[in-house]
Length: 635
Image (tube, rainbow, N blue to C red):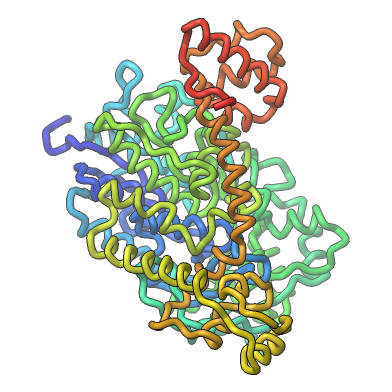
């Protein structure tokens, strides 16, 4: 039954990290948005480890924040433990990782959605996608309700066809204890969408009072005040720590003795699991010579005794899990509160999407998060905010937002998905990003906040704060480029103490800062700035000066790549008419329909010689007055 109350501009199906970000973005841009979820009390559920950040993932969270999203603010409001990671590996990969209170994190997102104007929440299970003449029209629910909208965003997580495995036991379920969405997949297939199965898993949770904490290695939060959000308040975090234990030969023997009851090794699970977050039984089998694996015991909430066992994912039978846990140092008396499990679920291979996350098959249908084959809260949130933005732009008839690989980790993420696809849960890694020195944790605001501002996702107060910060940074850069440090007893004593050679003649401050041993703090002792400078600003200034040559080199590489990005491949380009293409390349190009020559080059199996042949064909077509291919490579 349809009525005007059930008409919306945007419908979001699923209220996990992707769904919440999509719905918040769409409603903040002024669209009447409906957010449907199986159960409203699991919005933004941290079903696995309640942590945000880490290499590449922390970069994504900062980018979501810079665009005007919610994840960094939710993290800052609920952090229990936080540390810098990769501090010795350079600024390109340095980022934060926070352990959050999973209950408070969920409540933060739920409240943000409840108080957001234009956003309507409802608890219902979507069973059908309403499609007419290849266009999305809305959805139907288990209660028989029909909701209408020109744009639908699917963010179904692991709930779509979800099935949980613990040893030989299996049953339909979302994350353990949650309801699965059991009917929607068939509707998606009927609409012409290809589906597949993936698998992920989680670890046992144990009771804190049954752990011998004194026997374990302690890892406190970093001592300095920290924050994830560009607009958050820096805080010190105390009272919650993580602890390190290790698997033992006994642990590995228990695992080997129970592999015949493992759904992973008996063929019961058909879905492909995550390469970069394997189960402990998978590690033992793949690395038989390794006698120990690190396991971190991490808090999950302020008012909970549950402890998450990071790096101990398993789907072995419960009795085996008990023995495995109690074989770990410090865990000899541990009580399992929740067992580990594997979960298999449906996804839509993401090569069916345009670079703005809209389906190539059903107009007005967008997908974000684990339905696209990704793994992780950060990957989901980044796709969610982009899908929300692009659904609004689609409804308004405006050009979509497509972030470039040189512009954001989120751009790399989406380009990898829609161009290369994935047959296993995709995890964002710094190694996937060829321009990571340009995409640092410290400059996400400079890269993306102007876009968030233009879209109406960053308000006046936050924009003014950014401009103040940017001006302070530019002023300090200018000061260091102009100031001269003169040789003297104090100057050379400080330089020598830092392991740097003394100076014999005046040197520009910026030139001195380029020395590896010289920090901004040391310069500030030699020549204090007129006003105190925030540590984030001084750190960003030091990176820009120290890595200026490398940054310029990467910018030149970006410009060369952009020339290929500007060579457009018309949507209806006839690849069969191009002689010389490899048959595999021709087949993949016809299926993928890349938008640019650069995107074609990122398709697995398309060779450099194929690109050269394509470029010649495009130039020939352009000169004959045929389909325009945009700029040429010579321009």
